[in-house]
Length: 252
Image 1 (cartoon, rainbow, N blue to C red):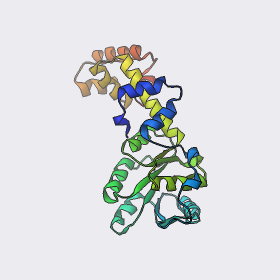
Image 2 (cartoon, helix red, strand yellow):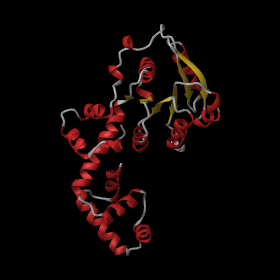
Image 3 (cartoon, rainbow, N blue to C red):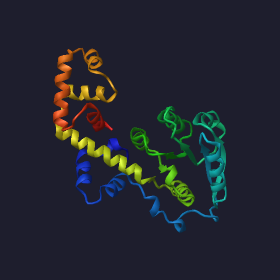
Image 4 (cartoon, rainbow, N blue to C red):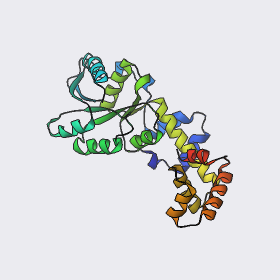
């Protein structure tokens, strides 16, 4: 269940709960990495091995993951790729259960790539590695239904293996930083509603968040600079922030 499907009433319940992060996990139907039990997952006696594609721009990481996964019972690496484009170009010949994709390079259209992987390899499940810095990208991957998101620099080898096996069995796994990003988004939505910004003020705030100046906003909305300044002052007052930068953070 993506973030777009979480209803407002449910979001309020999450914020009021004693453990909001856990409530988000329940809402999304996910399990924690720390809760995965190797004894309950496929092992060396599994009849059909889990076929994995490693997709990472760093050759060293690809090599390291290959060593980790190919030494794990019941897991078979079937392809290495330096980018999703390489996977997509070979999609017709691939028989794969899980595609691991590293989305750290912010210059790449990751959501487009992931959507194409879904379309060309509909039976494959996707495991994303992230550094958890780009909150919008994290939320976008959750909304599109990616089966697992792990924090690359804070995940042990056995956790990667257990996640692959759990995802193959039908579970969904999210790293703690991912649920924290989702919680932050819910909190921002609730605070925005409480601020009661007008439609025009929301338009101005969206443009502020993209780095537009008052002159740019005036041109974009076909209003005077004086009117823009009035809306900016009103936004800062309603959000109880000191400047445009702090206001823009409400949209993160």
